[in-house]
Length: 136
Image 1 (cartoon, rainbow, N blue to C red):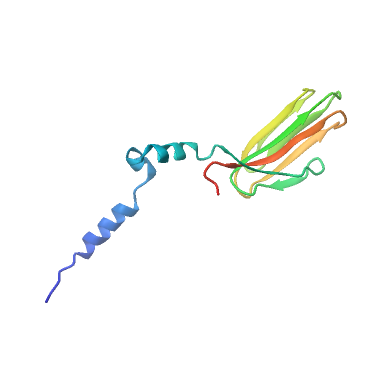
Image 2: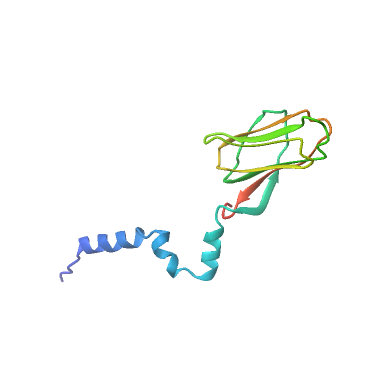
């Protein structure tokens, strides 16, 4: 008994199955999957609170997500704060504002620093890392 197998056709069929990108597939996804993929990269409700050290201490993002710092009761003149993400460099900065919030996107392993000056008269309300939607 002889069985003919077209190895080239099998390889082509497998390649076509394995080489489908999301752009070509999006019209075939259901509503739930489309909602999930449209939110990937957005902040989720999952977070971890961080402990703020000295000004300019360096931190490392545990996953893809967002790092946020909130200051309240900024009553001292000249009070400043900033959040710096490195590689690529992104920075937020504020000064003499009663309530200051800094949030920046970060990738897993990316370094970031929090700077603050003239901290008397201010209260750290929040230093938190929010995981990106879709990150486990």
